[in-house]
Amino acid sequence: MDFVKAFVCGGLICVLTQILMEKTKLMPGRIMVILVTTGVVLGAVGIYEPFVKFAGAGATVPLTGFGNVLWKGMKKAIDEQGFLGLFTGGFTSCAVGVSAALIFGFIASLIFEPRMKKE
Image (spheres, rainbow, N blue to C red):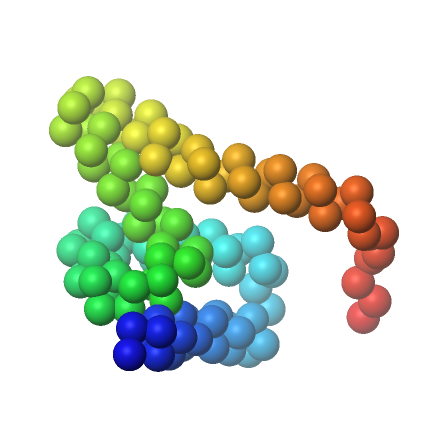
């Protein structure tokens, strides 16, 4: 049952994002920023953690989950270091995810030939 909950919840996040991409003129980069910011805000308000407990990977894999990880890292660093933790917490909590994205993106650029999108 955990797989079904994760699939449905993650799928709903993706469907809502796809609708946002199709129905607005927002660029994909801005939509990604909206998703991460939404995760940070929902984490700060205390809504995202119960959602993660319910949905599991369906809530942690999308970019909203990345925003929640940013928030948790910032909150922990602020508690430990004070004001400076506001700037360092997000980097330390998300370093592995960002590093993996950079490495796998570089490997993909070596394997595939980039092309501009035709409209």
